[in-house]
Length: 154
Image (cartoon, rainbow, N blue to C red; front, side):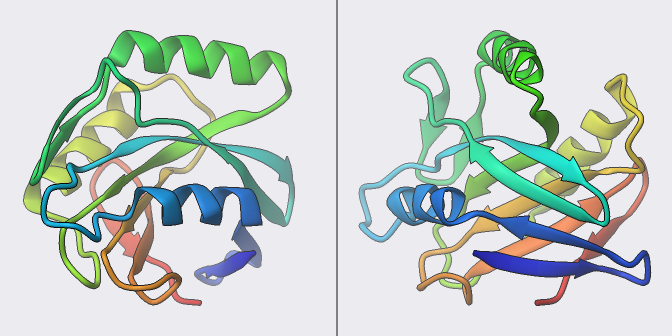
C-alpha cells in the first residue's frame, strides 16, 4: 500500500497493493512498450480515500510510446459498473516513458477539462502517472481541480 497526505485537509489517499501491482505491470520499462492508462476507483471512508481498483489499459484505447487516448465509451461503462459496486470514480492514471513521472501540458489540460466537464461532488480528481523506475519513487500523484494541480507527497 502507498499513502499520501492530501494537503492540510486531514485526509489520506491510499493505493491498495492490487492497484500498485497493476501500475507495476504496466510500467514502460522496454523501449517498445506503449503508454497505458485507465480509471481509478475508491471506497470513501473519510478521512481515508482508498483507491482499490485501477482499470485499463483496454484493447480499444489508442496508444503509442508517447501518448494515450482512452476509449471514452468504455470508461463510461466502467464508471457505471463500479458505482453499482459502491466504488466511486476519483481520477485517472497513465504511464510515461521517463524514469520519474511528471505531468505534461496535455496531462494538465486533460485533467482540468475532466474535472470541469464531469458531474460530481468531489473537490477534484486524482491524477497518477507511473514512471519507468521502481515504485513508489517513479510515481507522480496529484489532486486536481478545474484550474490547478496539487502534487501530493508521501
